Length: 352
Image (cartoon, rainbow, N blue to C red; front, side, top):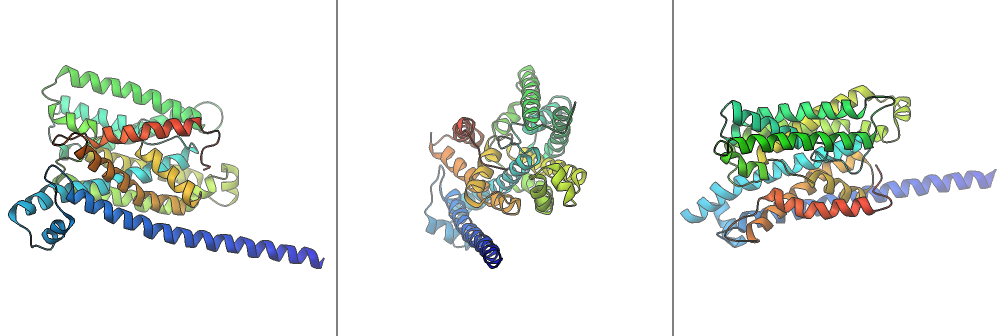
């Protein structure tokens, strides 16, 4: 009897020690990620067709720069960097939400067709409504993202049983391919009208001013807040719907909340920077491998790491073929495609 009690106390003590270690690692990792994000922002402000030293950037931000550096930093690179921060955090959290929601570690807004839906809605606006400016794309991108998110979930959950991760992925890929084909057909039918959409459709941060950034920020903030509220419920769902119900989780409410949050985040990011794939796939995996499967950590840390990856891809795109640029969406695809292949070849992807 005494031995049993001692063994039980030892297990409790060991469990508490592991929780404490996990918290310490999470706090330390958060500070490291924030430091890396700060360095990435500095590089984004300094590197480009007109490179500046970090000292010159700092002096310009303090109001001590020349007219030339003021123009480069404040008019060109500050808005571009802010666009990367906003779009990156939105895509990272949207990917984490979709993976937790579908319990599919290979899911992201691009693979599930959300980006393709937003792009088609924008293409329809360009073709039939005469839209030409990125700032006019926001509402259509939201609408397209919402319709496709709901459609993929309904198709994936049709038939017997609840939504199956494999069916959701197949439905997203198939629907995304169809929508992308329609978008391409519309673009080929009127190349002049889609000239303004070409850069956006490749996924780019170039030329994104405050007139485009400001309208989407409230939706990204709302999506991020909603995601954090849903985190405890997603932890319960990860144990299975029956267990989640036994723990008092509102499954229907969580599903609706995730759909709304993904629509806000993926729609806003796509409206701002165009369709960017793989970012929402890579980042949550890195966080899970490093910090575990607690969604209360995965979601906020994805919001920090994803802008780092996106801004680094943007900086890389500026220097690969300088003085010309490679759109950040293409660079992200070159990085993300091998990661997807690696994940597919692993016998056991990171647990959800």
